[in-house]
Picture (cartoon, rainbow, N blue to C red):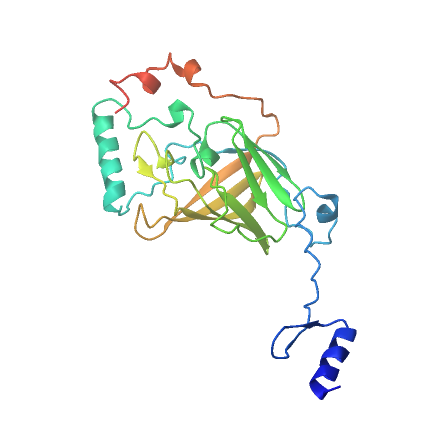
Length: 269
């Protein structure tokens, strides 16, 4: 038996694949076990993981303080992109004519973040170790803030929503919330007034702090290179509403037909 034939016989006997033709040995790669799927926010094993105790608990009903114009998210001075300026100018003109520009919220499109935070109704918040759920009395809009260390979803597979994808983390006595992945249509930073559109590149950082006496401040830092230049920063104050509950609400266009602002061609520009 030749030395090459002896090598082939030995390799085959050892259970290793041999390619035909010139002798080459291809070792089989070990099969890697599949990674377990990530745990959901409410999975008992995720909730039970050891974590530092949070500096505060948001669980309860909260409402924006409601002072004149403090519900708006457009600063006093700003520079818009040419595309956004078109919407803003049309909104201003509609106001002068006694109307409103593109009343999407009146047509039951979601208010979306950040406007959903400053409606004139309270927001129920439930805080768990892994997640915070916010349910607004306005349209029962739901916002989810993940606290379990996950990263933002791959942009190629994420499902964009009007409240975006929010990832939270604790920095000392502050809750920092990073939100992005908005749809980029029927979504406004202010509507019926400034009418500044929120694009699919809107990015919001919130810094949440307790300031005593049942009050909470949220500092907003917002960028949207498709709609304005630079950063917009502002702080909103919220108070606890211990007497308030959230009830089930539906926004149905047919129920709004009696409201002139939602259907009238003379008012909706």
